[in-house]
Length: 162
Ligand code: MG
Image (cartoon, rainbow, N blue to C red; front, side, top):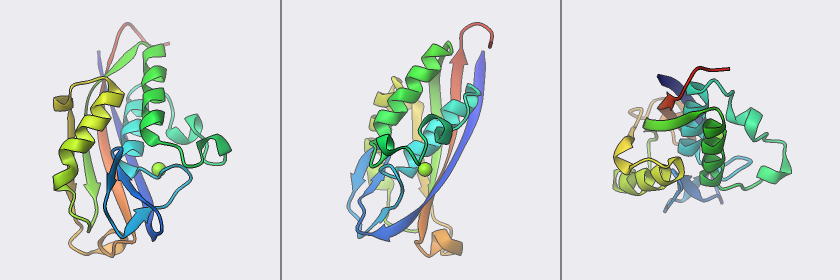
């Protein structure tokens, strides 16, 4: 049976932090702030996959007040989500993501992000879609005060849920 989940995340853009999206370091004067590496794209993917399997959210799996996750590599956390899915008899099938960012231009990085995410999800890169849009300079995203990500995850379940 195929199960569907939605993931949404937002992080603030600040000076003095690296910009990491989908596990890819992107050259930028502003980076995302957060307890982990603040990889907003990977966080949305994790919540989409967890949501499909009704396994809660990443805040429950990796609490933001837990020092163990300070500066954590979100791709490593995604691999842990995969293990949680497997324990539940599920495996990722595909994910479709949209980043909302006024800048920097992200299209040149799509394939690298797809590869990193696909590797952690143990699927082919062709099963991972990454795209982006601006908000036409509207709102906090349009002022480059943050970056948001939305992901739809599809998971295949073997057998019936608990
Ligand atoms: Mg987050």
